[in-house]
Length: 352
View (tube, rainbow, N blue to C red):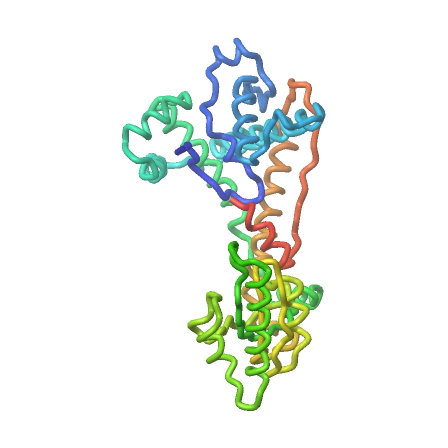
């Protein structure tokens, strides 16, 4: 289902993903009460509740599955803090004359509209989320203006060659390229209808193929093309270079114990029988600084940009008069500056 998600990726401070609902009118705030005030500007309880729902949806959290009332309050306070940050940025944009232009607002709306199946579907979603055309345009202006303020905070960030070199020296372990093997693979599957006699015949077949592959003049590639039922059969079983963690543990143990040119013992797994040949070995090695420089620069720019945005918000919070009226506990903000490629890869699957 299409949702109105006008802006993403404003940096480490996730401010705008919550601001998908129109600000409440003074009458609505009076009716429902205020959860907080930012320099006298109220954030209504109704706005907090709807934003809290969006916050949970964004993170795929089922509120009904939360057994701890304290955890629910902490999550709601996080949602409120993001609304406070968004209000602070909007007020800063007004003070600094960095408001989004009419052209920028319309361009952003058209980009979102293009993601719907029809103009009517877009209009229907606007109405369902409580917007009119005018209130949504005003809402988009707030979001785009907030982004301008954040972008301005990190605009002056730069990274020098010395910083890159020092980072490389401090994080040597992050620049090790793991040991690799280029493998050929011959595979005979166990089919669902195969009985024990059929499996025994498959074992005998692959054992014979292994002996042929190991014999003088044995051509593993030709045998794989003719007999393998794996995806790489047409390529003579060539599956390219792999790292240990890319293989099932029994296959990795067999493959990484072999010298170049050697053929493994038959490896039996629940899915079938596997035979491997090592064509080439590449030892673990350190990635040169010259090859890592741009990756380090990108990482450091992201970290420093995040720090600049967080410093801006910390300054705005310190200078502002913020009243939290809802009975919610204060929460701290975590910062992850880890460079580890493996950790970043794991985090990327959840990333938005």
